[in-house]
Length: 132
Image (cartoon, rainbow, N blue to C red):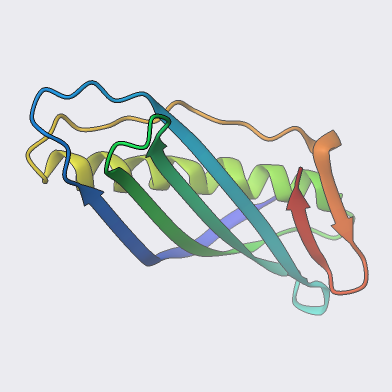
């Protein structure tokens, strides 16, 4: 069983210099890596998430988060990867919503994302994972 112990926002960049009333067409980019410490049955997830305008309007929000999780003996790393992402993602959504709503624009609520364990690549050399 994967359990979130704590998280922190390690980076937050926000740019919004578009004129009021400008229609934005937003796109998301996500990168999520997990480093394992098997002897301690814990891992550290590092999430980088960016929202920007597809038409290159001057709007961007970039959030970097780190979180520590514990897991059980025998837990599959691909499932730990996807479950840890699922536990951290609601906090990311809240950070983005709060940041944008405090800037004078309507709060942005990004869509829920789920990772497929079949798309997780595990790099055994350094115990990092990346999502394709």
